[in-house]
Image (cartoon, rainbow, N blue to C red; front, side, top):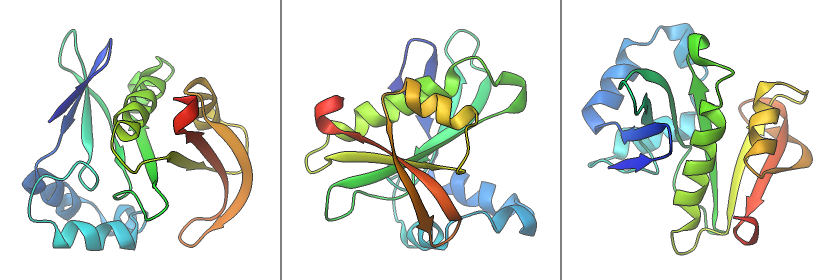
Length: 160
């Protein structure tokens, strides 16, 4: 599965690629992974875009510039959370904004999805700029069970 944007191809990783990537991570890097997501990954039996990540490739030269994806399937309220990472050499080029917009539009096309959410550190930073540009609204600070205090950002179906 792929999602095309003007400058990027978001290519869904296979289940094997995702598991191999996680296995190759250092213990310090694994600490940042969501326990809930890891349990979804362990139970997965096929390439599920709600669970597996997307590699972000530039369309003009197929260079990998980052990863993005959902932090799990939509919940009972129709909410899904996105996340993204751009490699340091490619930051500041708008790739994160383009990926966030593409994931949001992809999610909101699915029945039952009413809200796309993201979390950032509770301070102005590059990610808060990305989400603002992608049409998200800061709805305040919340306590994330894994990350502690974060700013919550939301984009509803009617603003997509």
